[in-house]
Image (cartoon, rainbow, N blue to C red; front, side):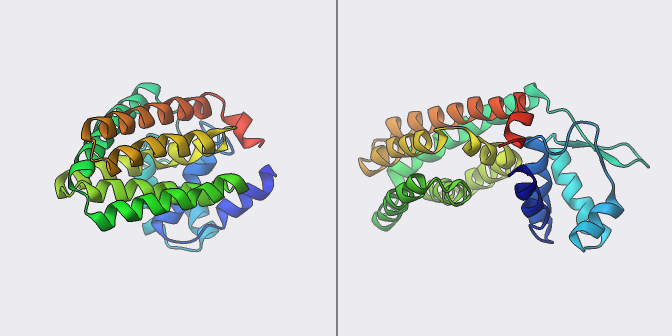
Length: 229
């Protein structure tokens, strides 16, 4: 199964976003190991693109702390810096807490109905064990939360931070039982928003990200375990 998953990721596509997702997934789950070279020419050939989008993908991976490069040398997979990862998750927890608190106060009736409906529909994905589909739903859920805060500056900050944490947040869904716990954590956020309970919504969102950080740390600490799943 490991080989099938890796091949699927490698065929993910040709845009910068798809390359970042493909390469970061291989790094976080241990298919690419610290010290492995990421040659621009080889990557351009694999994804059938020019070197320009490859350089941008590597730049973004560097911002995530997954890749490092020195002048005139190939990029290499770096060891994930635990302090760097923790600092990003700390910022993410604070930002998501703010978004949930504001969303509880500012979401329109239609927005509240939409986030609740999407949350309820995601239960089917858990029943089916659809990790990839749930990960996509998870992104939509949190985006709705950010938009529901109705603050453009906060939206920019939280989406930029989330983009850097995306591969770690996706990897958590490989953990046994994580889909169910994620749904339950979302439930607490949605319930508070529907009640316009800003304090509870903010605390629930903060706690949710703290749990995600713990799950992501498990993946980072044991990447080979998840590469073999």
